[in-house]
Image (cartoon, rainbow, N blue to C red; front, side, top):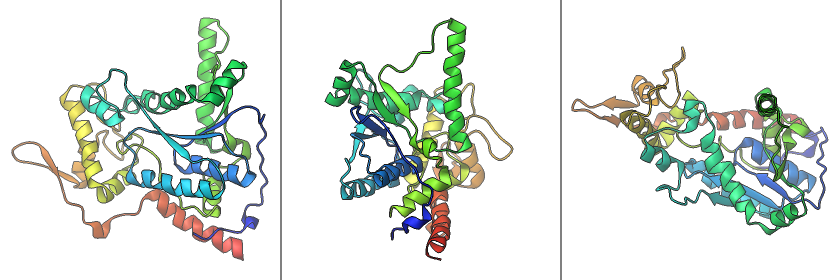
Length: 324
């Protein structure tokens, strides 16, 4: 993809920090984290460590994008993305999908929790950083490692940080103890510091000569939108069926007593179960003798991923404005 002229990026931005402190970047290989990397490249500020926590259930496009991103990082003399994974001590699984299948449950997000992202992402990255000599030296000096997080300046992501802060404040009020801060990390949110919302992030990714990544998430993530699930059915029917099986397995094991399925509960637009929604959409059908099967997708009608459709539209718009 041809790089867009710098004149399209007229808003200046900067990032200041103590260069004696180790700088790490949590990369989810989605729009926000890739935009954050592009911003750091434009500023010439090299993170000491870029980590991607692999749950074992990302879509093939995300794994392929890591290679694209690493080529971009190498071309700019930046460190490449290091992939880290959950390593069990006693558990009979090493990825999120097997965790759910073996325990007859669903990702905690389906129940309103966040433990899947903590266990298979944040904790995995921390385990790696604990053995990193620059971090160990930093902690010995009584300092904290800087961790860059890709939350953009949209209202949704801004509210995420506000909720985290209020949760800490509420706990401190209830216990009468001071607000507990992370002893290991100072968290920074460059996209929010720069005022980059999602549209601005997309502009900078395309402007850096990179294609737009699709949303980084497990193929059975409860936050999946219906149109994204349709895309999964057409482009990765094998993963689609594994996601349906995850829900069916949890239901048969009694793990869905309080929720309907991966979408938790019904809305006016859709049921709370991926299985029921897929039946309604005609993506699967039930067998007369029990069980179910996929209805073979007609790839001639396969939809483009919503994120990529947005990229095509924005790419055309900003290129037109860049060269006019």
